Image (cartoon, rainbow, N blue to C red; front, side, top):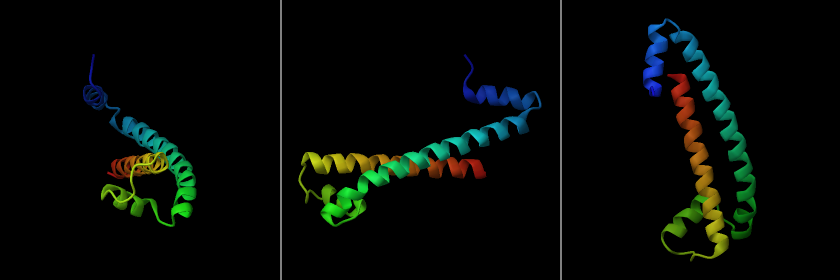
Amino acid sequence: MSTLLEKIEAIEKAGAGELAEQALRKLMHLHVQKYERELEAVRRELEPFERQYGMSSEECRRQFTRGELGDSAEIMDWMGLYDNALLYQERIETLRTAAES
C-alpha cells in the first residue's frame, strides 16, 4: 500500500499537482470549519465553570497544575473540556498554517 507521500508524488509526476493542492486546501478549510464549530461548542460548555469559579479556564489550568484546586470530578470535567479546546485550537492553527504555505 502506498503512503500518502507516495501518492502525492505520483500525482505530481502525473502533472496534476496543482489540482491536488487545490483539493488539499479545500479539505483543510473544511476541517478548520469543523474544528471551529467544535471549539465554539466547547467554549460554551466552559463558560458556566468560569462564571461559577470566577476565573478563566487558563487560570484554572495554572492553579490545577500547581495542585491548588484538588481533583474533584467537577474540576476534572472542566480541565477535560479545556484540553479539548486547546486541542481544537492547535489543529485549527496547524491547518491554517499548512493551507497558507
